[in-house]
Length: 95
Image 1 (cartoon, one colour):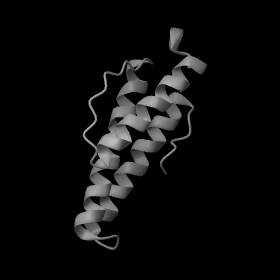
Image 2 (image 1 turned 30 degrees about the horizontal axis):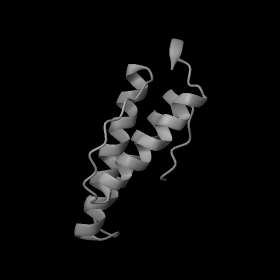
Image 3 (image 1 turned 30 degrees about the vertical axis):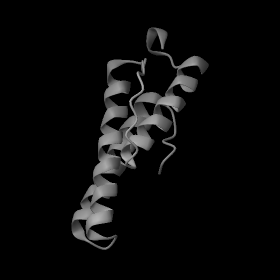
Image 4 (image 1 turned 90 degrees about the vertical axis):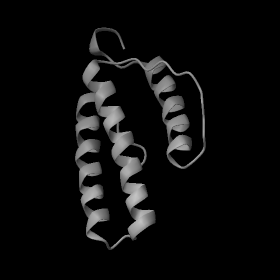
């Protein structure tokens, strides 16, 4: 992403990274070198969403959907997704 812009190459690479990251989040032990490009904020927001996604899924599996811990993790995930979408102008695919 040159000059803070996101281009088709970034989107293709980003999609591949998301796919790999989600395999890891869901328990697949994937070890693939990935080079993510974007502004510091975009990459930070992306990493935050992945972390919040993992915490939400873990809470859901451990406590169920109706537990306050799960609800808090979902709210934090929603905030992270909004920040990601705002900084990248990309709709989060795993809502």
